[in-house]
Structure formats: structure tokens, C-alpha cells
Length: 310
Image (cartoon, rainbow, N blue to C red; front, side, top):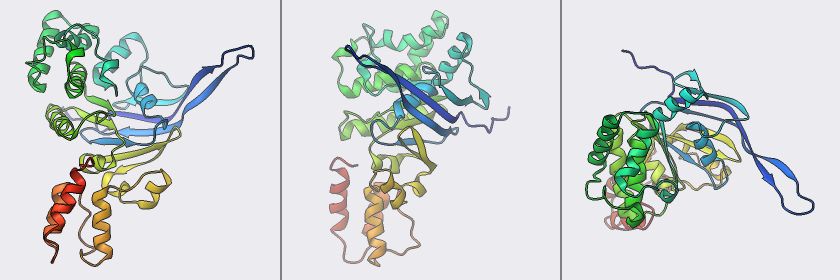
């Protein structure tokens, strides 16, 4: 069977307003815009990182992408078809699109990890045997064997993150959305998360995530979307978007450290302009290794990148 060329999820002109009510004698209610005509396309098996400041609309966008919120205006299409907000349609939607919240404590609530992993398949209406099969598959895929009988509140932040992602994976979605998955993780935790996401992708799942770490986005993503004030400012290949200094400056973002180092080497005539900007730490270090008289540069740059900025 041919795979559809339509995006997994596409939104056009999405608008959303939140209600705000003041308290007191002069109490008033007003509608505040959260999304102002946002556009976005999620392509199959393309890593998409969404960047933007707090309040830009990233979480609100994600709640629309899995059908939790319904837009005031605009269109959402799943696999080329208009979104279906009926009970049956929403169940199928949430089978295809999984959402993992920024704070694992907002998602983990069951007495044990195993019971928490079973919640998603259960609400999809699956049989007990199918629920058990999916839970076992998820435990094996994410390496949760030693955690499955523990209470979620006894886990470390990294372990909670892994279990919350497991809750999304157990639904066997086509698209998994991670809201700020790096939050609260140390360098080792980030490395574990990257390996975990790679394992999930090998099962055919497409991953979209929001992050404030532009260096991580440069290394991980195929595409980047920058959002601000409820709009998509741009979306395109990561190497193009993140190399555009003026665009990033207008969005209040700094270029990735690896791009900054390579750009300065270009300007200093130490690196030919024909050499593309490095996307990964190993690529940057390889470039520095080849520079004459810069034997100490790899050690220095390696320290800079590993010092909290990958």
C-alpha cells in the first residue's frame, strides 16, 4: 500500500482565545488571544523542533494537535482529512497523536508505573489482552522492567520523563508530541532522552518537540518552526532557519553555538566558505582538528559545548 504524501498533521490559520475573568466589584470577562492564525505542517518521519519564548503558544498549539482544544477558527487536517471532533473521531485522533506534557507529574497519577502505562490503551477501548500486550511492549522498548512495579512519585525526574513518554508510546501513535522534554534533565538525562527518542523513531513514530535549547534543536531536528505571539514566524530546514542570524534576532533567539564558532572561523579565513556549518558537536570538533595551529581548540570547544549547552 502506498504511503500518503499528505502531512501527518497540518494546521492552517489556527485561532484560539482563552477566557479571563477578573474578581471583585468590577468583575469583567474578556477573551484573550492565544493563537492568532497559526500555520504548521508535520511531515512523516521528519524531526520537527518548535522554538519560541514562553507565552508564544507552543503548549496551546499542542493541545490543538491532539484534539484536547478546539480552535475558534482555522483548520486542522490529519493525514489530509479534516479533523473529526465526534467521540469516535477523537478516540481515533488520540490513537494517532500522543502528547507528553512538560511536567511528568501532570501526567503520572496511577499507583504503579505499569498501571500508568495501561491508562492510554484502556481509554482507547482495547481488550484487556491487547492492553497487556502494549504495556509489555512499551516496558521492553523503554527499558522500564525495573520500574514497572514502583510508584511514579518515587522516581527521579529522568525516570518520570521516561515513564510519561511511555504512556504516549503505549497508544502506538503515528505522531508523538513532547512538550519541553529537556526541562529538568541534566546532561546525562538529555543523552538518555536522545537515545530513547531514537528507539521510538525506529518503530515508525514521528516526533515533534518544543524546546528552549537551540543548540539541541540544531543537532537533533530536521526541521524547525519558530513561533511567537501565537503565530508561526517561519518553518523550514533546520540548517537554513538556524543559520539566519537576522531571523533569529527578530524572534529573540541566539544562533546555535556550533554555528557561531563555524561562522567566526569563516570570517577569519580559517575555514573555507564552501564548508557547510556543522550540525553536531562531533562535526565541529572534526573541523577544528583540521585547523593549523589549533590543537587546543577541540578541547576548549568540547568544554564549552558540554558545559550545559551540549
